[in-house]
Image 1 (spheres, rainbow, N blue to C red):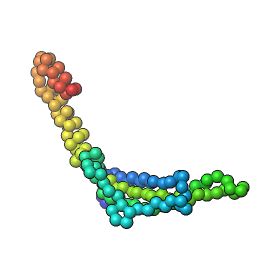
Image 2: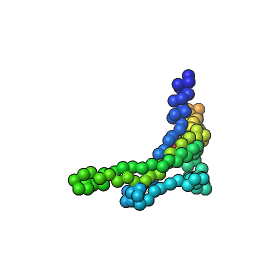
Image 3: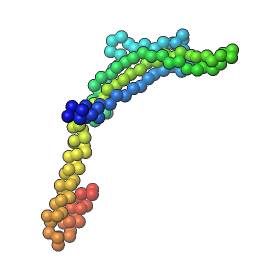
Image 4: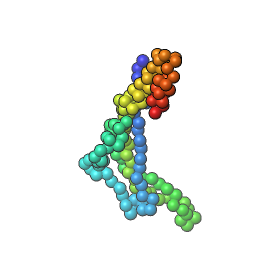
Length: 135
């Protein structure tokens, strides 16, 4: 039972990673740093633009990446570049799917069953009901 609950929790949470890096300037030229307080601000209306998800947490990290920049006097030169990473934890809202998918589908099935209760000789009523269901 507990393993089953853990799987359900994993399905409803999503971790999204993103990074901003400078490929033109090395750490000697530029070094990215997160702001000490409130490093990530949320845009007003974020909830309306992502109605099926809730942003639960944002983790910020500083990182560097080493990249082959070519050859220097017969040796391989590595450049070290500054980067910033974010990890966003999103939780899927079940209520969104309930209201947008499950309830309308359930109602469509119920309305389609009405045609079975109509008299078999009332063809116009059946056709009208079928058209209403399709539209």
